[in-house]
Length: 186
Image (tube, rainbow, N blue to C red; front, side, top):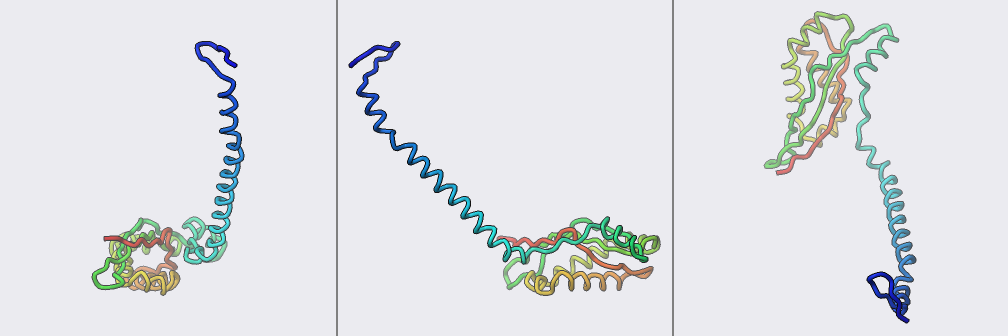
């Protein structure tokens, strides 16, 4: 049976062929969507289950300078923060000869007794020396050695080395705003 519709001609037999050809399409598309959803959910569950073991490699963030100062106000020993060192990028000692060391991005800051103007002035004047002490410390160890020492020991070592150079007073503690290793590629 033939009929006209506008400038196009259409046949009923074509409609039957068209329907048969695409009749199973919704079932196929539904199956594909279900497989994709299962893959997304399964991948998410797998990724979250690994997160616990991977999370152990992440460091616990140090408190902000403001938090340390506020906590010290509650105690009898008030502290101030010296955070003008900025971000440093020392390269660690190579693991093996012929290799490059790892880039360490570290933003150190430290606390000192609040109101100690003489110590603050000395620290400000020795800013470059303190940066050199910190850089040399990280450059003298490999990434593996630094990770093995642990962040707490590194902070204690740096505190001792910095305090050895100070005459007017002593810093209380060393903190890191950032402490991230990057392996460098050739």
